[in-house]
Length: 133
Image (cartoon, rainbow, N blue to C red; front, side):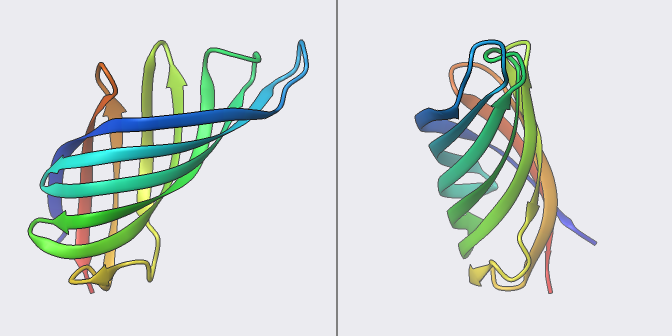
């Protein structure tokens, strides 16, 4: 049975740059993002996202990888999350999966899935159902 962890993270840095943009076309961008986690998951995260804005701006879809260093329910280590999500109507939401084999330290063997929904001011509510095998 999976342990359910909840918490928040705060976006502490967002550096986004377009790499393909033409008037009337979708815009493609890459973002380097830093986060601070709190709750059942504590620590720091560094993410790389690829984004597409189908109308050139506004709503977007994104994929990414985020490395989290810290603790999960007091187990210290690091792991990587594969992320897929969207941004619409001023709110980001997505699903994530722990990348197999990415857990280090006391998080070696970590497996899990969860997701997140942004709130306001760069804050995000999160959940992760996980096991260690």
